[in-house]
Image 1 (cartoon, rainbow, N blue to C red):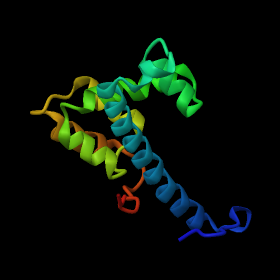
Image 2: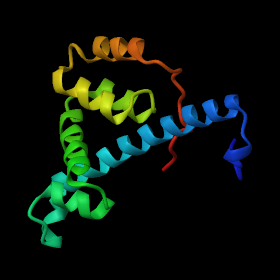
Image 3: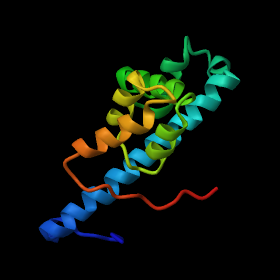
Image 4: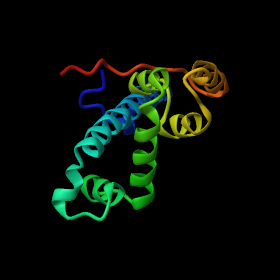
Length: 134
């Protein structure tokens, strides 16, 4: 949709659509990273690299601040018990920050309601990214 887009020449509508599209892709990418983190956590892959812990390993592998790695690891661990939230995050409906906040208070019984409440508070449209293929 935005191949070779020159954003300096974009209209306001194109910029808005770009943010919607790439925001959804950003969320879906973070969700996929959480699935990778879950697998690395179970397999304890980080141990073979000599890391002191999963957070440190994720920070080094992704080249992000430790606070970002810590958030991703925490969210990944909490999502294991929250299938609806995990699915909506993976679809790009919720950002990492929204998913983090919801996962801190949600249970399997309350997650759907909390998601709908969070989406109702969102200021922009929900835009789904393209479906991941494996």
